[in-house]
Image 1 (cartoon, helix red, strand yellow):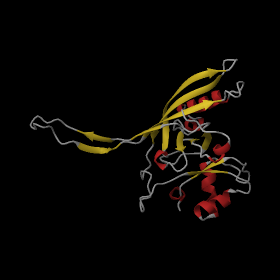
Image 2 (tube, rainbow, N blue to C red):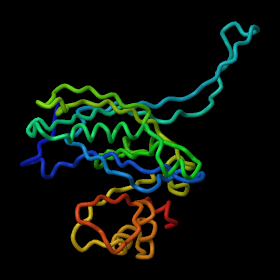
Image 3 (tube, rainbow, N blue to C red):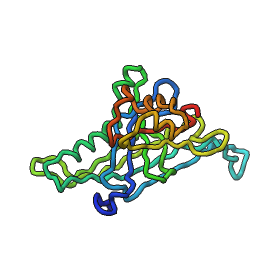
Image 4 (cartoon, helix red, strand yellow):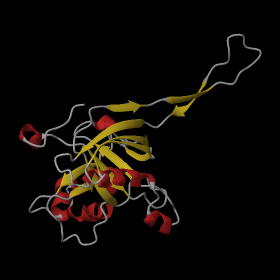
Length: 241
């Protein structure tokens, strides 16, 4: 299994992430506030993507060779991603345990969705650099964790997780209706000097759009941004630009 290095060339390596969001309220197809950004210890060694179509065939006794199938529509994408977790260099750490629990929580109904009377598990967005084919809004269908190494106290320090994602199609099927271009959400890591206003100006050409970034990430106080925090930047179409 190929694993990324945390030193040397690994410093410039683009890491895969899984943004875990609150489900939206109402009929929106835009993920709600960011709950957690799950960072991969090592990039996946493989991804399995599938997509299909739905056809319907109605048998007819009068037709010798069978009736003509009727196209019903495309099926949403599905993806299985393997996540390798390892903290064996720190045998007393519980980071593997916490990360597996974070993945399992993607199959649990969120408290906010229950309060809004629209119970739902979190919505997630997998992202890996420029690999746009694998980037789509989804729900987690299942998580299978295999623990393969344990510390002296019995806490797992190595695990491999199989996470199955099922696409949640947007109303526009992820496309700009005028250009056909993919609607892309980006993740930005905050650095010194960043503000929501400056990010909005760079991303949308309008500093007033900072409210859309704040809402997408559940930010109550826009004046306090911590360095290193990853922010989901909504697509321009989703904020009206």
